[in-house]
Image (cartoon, rainbow over all chains, first blue to last red):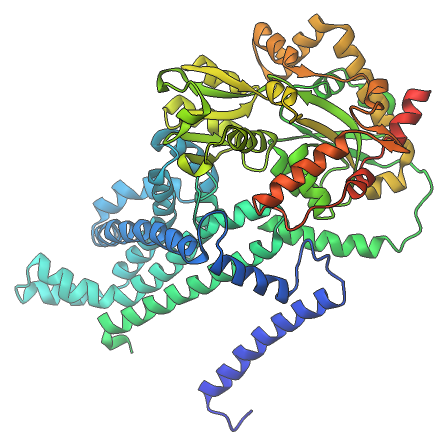
Length: 258
Length: 338
């Protein structure tokens, strides 16, 4: 492999890891080591995929389930970005803002989402609001904390120099803070989106009738493990696609990080 | 989805363990009883410590399980030795080949499970449900009865919004005013009745229309093979609980009130809404039947499975013989015979 370029070497290794996983899956299901109730084989999962994609699962097709979930995630994540980045910059740039907000953020951050969810349902009801709220709360801390770190790690000389040269607060924000902190903030957003994904099933347990997380939860109740595994694979792939899109967006907005 | 992984891991372990010679009749270290959060004589058995009395040398652990879906997962993950399941989860579990056997009737469901409607929502018949928001725990006895009743009344379920909520979430949503009707069970049912609702239909009425619903006590196959004596001890304890329930209604109501933290009046009503079947009667044709001649429970399972299959919740419908094979009245026959 030494004659391969680093890029194709990476491709070979990535393909290998996926092939090993699928190979292992085929092996344990074909040889009967795994009970097919708990781990159905790739063929059964593929069949479930085709069936749900064409006929649907309990009234919605796979595309509708994915669409519903992506809508929930993107709305909640969008709100978290709009709130989290300004909050993080404020907390990173001003000691007072940091002192004021950090107890709140630090307090709720480690709370388990399901524990929070019970309260959210009582306060906001069983509709979309409580789902958005849970996903929003899951997305927020990651963005805030990395933004604080990103802003704090900016060399204060840049800020002072800009101010000495007569830059307004707005100019400092757009020309110094955001460009310098951007790449770290983007990394934080990627981690945060991943975490929001992990809360999706929990958010769709209560009174949902569509969504990929609900589909997984409902299928698990009826022991339809082929649908469960198919749903998890789809969830994983859409998560990867979103992450890729976000990296692309980052390169577009911040060409200097290329 | 940790459960699925756990289940996969435990399945691998179970396969490995099954090669070990079955130790004949030594006592298990611990017996785990998963009991459903509803009103039946298992609460009496638990409260009076009857399980401990019948197996003094064994540690007993009780795990409260919210509903049939959770119980199926607990069984699939091998986290209980004994469990309880309503007829829909039983049909699901047996069809999917879960390693369990039905050994006793826990209870027949009367008005302890009921459909409550908001009194100011103007619901006089099933047709009035069109455009309303309903809730039921999907995959449970009440979800099954709700859809069965709608079918019988010729009302399209798609004309209303039916939400999947667990009983405690239904109570929360009801008090908030998020839903107009719900079919679920005590002790949470009462919270809806007391907050502007009234009973519209009960599971008992549906039973008289030919859709009986019940909960059956199940044992894990592996446990039953290893410790058949302890299956009988378990049944002896539960039968004593049932006899106590039937013979001492006043004390039983007090026990239910204590266990579920309810008023005595509420506990009494819930108790009366559940039918307990004496163990000897469980061996008649209306219930489990006998080893050679399995009773009507098998027919209910077939009907339930057919219904679930029409809902695409089950991939196939097993035959009556296959469902009859799940029911094992043999242990109870021994206990009653003694």
